[in-house]
Image (tube, rainbow, N blue to C red):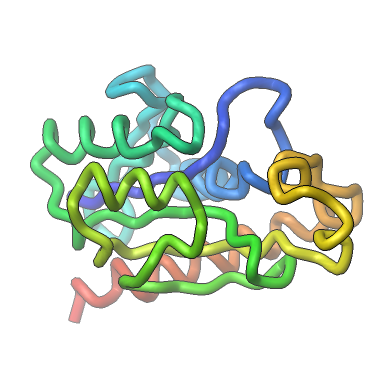
Length: 180
C-alpha cells in the first residue's frame, strides 16, 4: 500500500494559494485515478485509488500545514505504511513557478509541513514531489504573505499542465519502480 500526502491548509481562505499546491496535486491525482470520495479520517481527508495496480491512499491533512505530521503519522501507523511507501506533494519556494522536482530524501528546505512530517516519522528519506511557487516578485513580500497569496489568473491557467507533470514524475519515480 502507498500513501500520497498533499500538503496545504484547509478552508476557503486558503483555496488556490501557493502554499496549497500539495492539496491541488492530491485533488488532481484523486480525479485522474477515480478515487473514492474523500472521508474525514485521521485528522485529514482521505480517499483511496488504484495506481499502477497498487492500493493507494491519498491524504490531505486538516491540521494546517505546520502540523501535517500528526495526520500522516496517524495514517501510516494505522495502515502500517513504511516511510519508503509515502509520497509527499508540497510547494517549494526555492523553485521557479511551474517547475516540478522529485526527491527521495534530503532536508525540508524550510517547508514546515515537511519538517513536521520528518520529525513525527523520524525519517527524512520520504519521497516527495515539489511544486515551484516562486516568482520574481517574492523578494517584495514577506515569505508568509507570499506563500499564502492567491495564484494569479495566469498561474491558475498553467495549473493543469503543472499538476499533470508532477503526477507523472511521482508515478514514474514511486510506482513504476515496483513494476520492474
